[in-house]
Image 1 (spheres, one colour):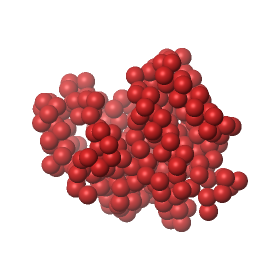
Image 2: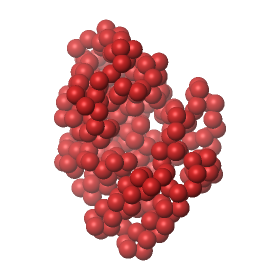
Image 3: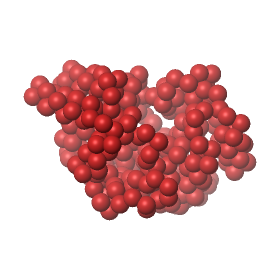
Image 4: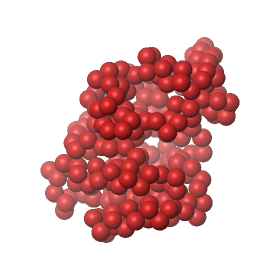
Length: 278
């Protein structure tokens, strides 16, 4: 396993003009260092980039050669639109998502690829560990339910997969309608449609990715605009008959409370109630 001549998986990443070029390069390098080599790397440039980010793309092109596909969009229209553009361009039947500022652990994709094929799953994600300056500087992880039944039940109240480290089947994503315009919840919305279509999910219980926090991550998960998005998504779950009316009301109350508290308190809430320790 791991020969370059075998088709393995595509990597799908989006980048935009405000990204840090050092983090961008580190993220790409972590995918180049995988124990199971990639076959295809699709990077969607969501609008114009800075000269520094373009230099990272030049460096990546030198490393990847024909394996790199760089798609440049004229305008910045958000992550959901960028990924919707990128999915059909992926050459492999299996796609590994990667954010442009996180760091995948070396065996991440090999572990996911094996589980995806051995268990006939449609989506495989895993535990992520948060960090600020360097991996390991926070004792904080996000562990999610492991089995398909547990995942489906959990999805009624919270996002059942860690999007930064998900691997999925391209056919299942396209069958569900690909990423759609659902600000703040593009990935969660896709998971629900995939699960409703019969795709099975699995979450690796050990950390497979180090996720960079800070830069207002928890602030972005609050405020009136985010609350409007959150309540819109709850209506989507209700109209799809994925949740009951009682669950809908409970979810709306919780989302409203968390969205309206100050960012610092919101981070503490996530740390105490929604995160685990390694």
